[in-house]
Image 1 (cartoon, rainbow, N blue to C red):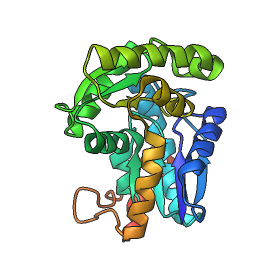
Image 2 (cartoon, rainbow, N blue to C red):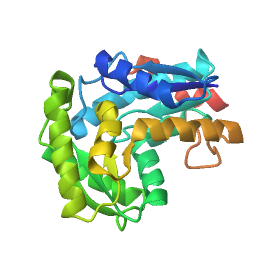
Image 3 (tube, rainbow, N blue to C red):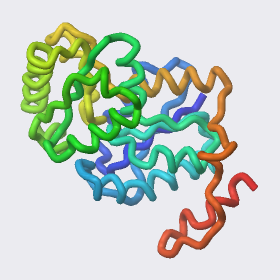
Length: 249
């Protein structure tokens, strides 16, 4: 089995960290391929960042289909940027780490809270929770006030911020599970779980296990209507993804 994890930002140190964590959860026979696109922002914290990352995500999914014989794809950003678009250009399962983590949280706890980065990222996360039918499960979305790359530069400060917000989510908001709202938080999950004494979910780990299960089940992305391949057309300025509609015809 080959699972391709796409870190939508171009910070390769984060991509390496994501790959290392994923390999600790994957089956011994599963090959994890982790990449950053050739284009995109160095971190993703707002709508502009998300939208600029999507062309690179689509190209990496198409490359996985054409050249790498990938069995499933994971988009490793908590905003799940380009998730539905990626499902249009492959028949393989495509998972977002937010959708995966929220799905697991709804199974193991009646209520969860999400720990995120900047305050401005809150609306993106609120929309995700609503879109995934989890508003009644989500007690709070708490911001650390730190940018994504600050967790790379100063992990001690990052851990402290996550711990403080996690503690508040449990004692004040009533959370019984914590979801880490950034792929850059992958290395903090285990330590936070020990300190907070509730389940702490990292979306990368959740996605890897779900992806393996979907591949074993032999399921594919439905191409009946909503996720069918895009209609053929010229897309000016994006030569690498022009006429993606040829894929399934």
